[in-house]
Image 1 (cartoon, one colour):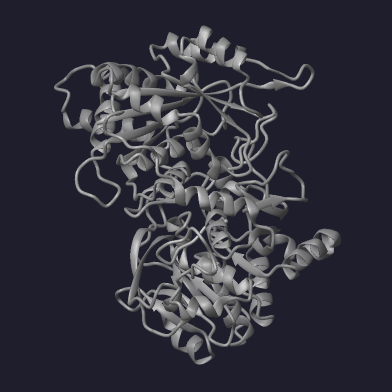
Image 2 (cartoon, one colour; image 1 turned 60 degrees about the horizontal axis):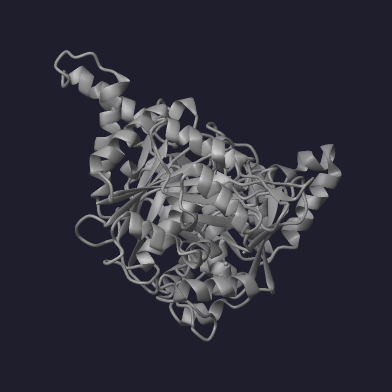
Length: 621
């Protein structure tokens, strides 16, 4: 097993995740098998209980792991299925060590950071690296490890020490360190400054790690004299210094690395030059060029409660992007804060209310993503009502499906107090109820999580056709509440169709409105399995319906015709996003590759924004 460690210096948010993912993709293109590990130094056991405002979206894996959004980057770039153990946190490590201590596994020894914590980290890495994630048998050839945070952070010190020991343990030729650093350009003089990177590398070496390759973030390609200075003072060969400069979209990053021969430097450090082939990136290149040339827009209104933070809906944005490219459309996301659609906003801030409704009414399609809590729920209900009554394509995910059911019960059945017990425990018409197996005392890891099977019980429904007329699909879930099975017959008699159910037939998974061009709600999260070139079927349906071009996809069983889109395969596709208004603007192009209006922006951690140092990173695949 070969190991690549990706670290970051100077500032956070430089794009270590995108860099690690791009390196993995490049090595796969060279014919190698790759797996990934993300180390998060925070004390949380996992990301499940963290607010999206703190850390962006919670990404859910097949095994139910609630993990950092960077694992979503890895899955999308590498097209693999990771496990919860591929995300290491300080909380997990300490928990495992303390459990061993309680069992007496340390035989009375004093349990310390060194060697017990550091040994546990190394053992975890070695164990997880051997787990196959690409559907093939046996371990991968290379494991790419991303160390979260910035060199010098106190919380990451035990991991640094463990990785120092680990690099000596696996030996030369089996370990390659890539340090992602910043080379800022000061506007006053317009000169690329190397000192921040010099200091970062000095700090790294002082801890016992020496970088083999420098990946320098900057606004433009590094000048040769700048490379020479970095090589001299950082003790890294000039040919091992690559520039990750600003590009139109981040699908260019693997191509940037290839064009600068980064793969050759990596393969040389890992003694793999004689094993690997030249990288085969033809499909990726075609898709990237297509992405750059899209002009005709498709507008999707994203109605949610975290619209001030685009990372909260990162996978949803990516799934929309993948589907839009498949339909040859440039994605424009109109961010609509759900609370701004409500009547109380009309009284308190009429201009804000009008602007929100103008965005909703100007959209080609409406998407209501998942969420928790009652803030903005009434606005989401109004958005679902608008889409239903005006034949606007609608996709509701998780809470978005439950919202659609509540709205239908109120408007069509006349049950004006219909609600979810999450928002109103006293409602006399509970359309959505707490699942009996859930826990009301513990939050972490107690939801219905991970991959679950949904069976289609209406074979000719839109969803089944988009999935290719299969009998069932496996999609990832994350919820505590479900549609009340006691109200199903009443809702179906009024025209709402529950076309997908779980294996028991008692848990509702997919709803459709047969009289509507595209009105779909799903209890699961299809966005987590969308890939560039392989878009989620239901997102593809939403975009196609928004483009008034759904029928060809239904007749082709959800497959993308080659006459419609190039660079596609197996019925899947690829996409783009801008911020042209609202409170925050990206200084250098689209956020996460998606053009946006309204109030969507990133969180100041470098995910899809200009970080104040002249460096713009557009998000992730």
